[in-house]
Amino acid sequence: MLKLKDFEAAYDKVQEIVLPTKLIYSDSFSSQTGNQVYLKPENMQLTGAYKIRGAYYKISTLTKEEKDRGLITASAGNHAQGVALAAKKQGVMATIVMPTTTPLLKVNRTKDLGAKVVLHGDVYDEACEFALKLAEEKGLTFVHPFDDLTVATGQGTIAMDIFKELPTVDIILVPVGGGGLVTGVSTLAKLLNPKIKVIGVEPEGAACMKASLEAGKVVSCEHVNTIADGTAVQTPGKKIFPYVKNNVDEIITINDEELIPCFLDLLENHKMLAENSGLLSVAALKHLNVTGKKVVSVISGGNMDVITIASLVQHGLILRDRIFTVSVFLPDKPGELTRVSKIIAQAQGNVIRLEHNQFVSINRSAKVELTITMEAFGTEHKEKIINALKDTGYNPQMRDSKSVY
Image 1 (cartoon, rainbow, N blue to C red):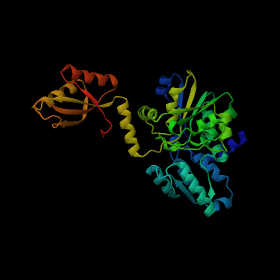
Image 2 (tube, rainbow, N blue to C red):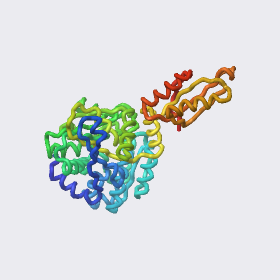
Image 3 (cartoon, one colour):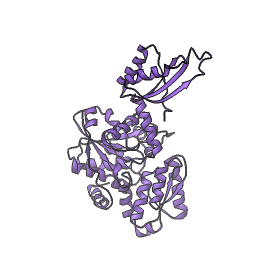
């Protein structure tokens, strides 16, 4: 059984490498939910994620013989960087097997930290199976990203941080992939205060822990499909499962669409970049059926490539009616385009793109199509612009804005 002294030893050890990630009080999320919401920004760690804690502590406990054989692990990205940095700091060679779908940013950063990277499989589970095979063939020491109690103990030091700053915390929301983070955090939290509530948060498209808890044993998801790549795990850890079963109060599942507005909220209100897996604990805030509680959302990581960032920004703006597209029909004669532009300008709309289709009708003088993508302040302003077009005789039709950039 994991005991308080285990976490205290891990806490002391990881101070050699972790950065202080002080709790951030969120006015915006607090007002939205009626709770006192704090963010635990583990996306600000050296490797951009909490994983450095468990990796560093685990490697520090290995024997010289185990280190000399070299390390190997499998990871969707964040554990990879944690092991790579921890191994580099402790003078150990490391090989990382990553799924072929891993964002390029995470692959390159892992290589930059001195690790050898092998790409294999479409999901973490396939990469892990291959890593175990290589470990056996080459005699390497395998460092599991989550199904390892020593690793989980290192991750659990996050709870120690939280209690030192906010000893009266009521609820901790923790992203769940394989379960290492939630194991460590929930176990230590219950040791420090049995009344605290620890809630795990999984993507709907990879809810293997929720399925396992409902089944009373470890089971696998048939398919994994989620934009939260850091938590895209088919099977949770067997060694850690009893701890999750005993210490985690609830599992909330989040639809991918819910992560998009959370990304914008965090970016605009806190100037903070979080990856999709790290956003799970933010999205879960609206699923809580309590008010007046002190809630900590663990932002587990912030490693996201620029293309994904651009996609999330675009989709987020569209969902919030900050960008929208309409089409109107008008006669093909001088001055008509100016007339439409003037109506939009008077309503304070900002045109991003125009498409003028003269081939929508054989009779061009009677009808051409003008498709307009524009910016608005939100839903109310969008309706104002549309109504202004209607009031001047146009019949604007909504169009898909997803190809705007």
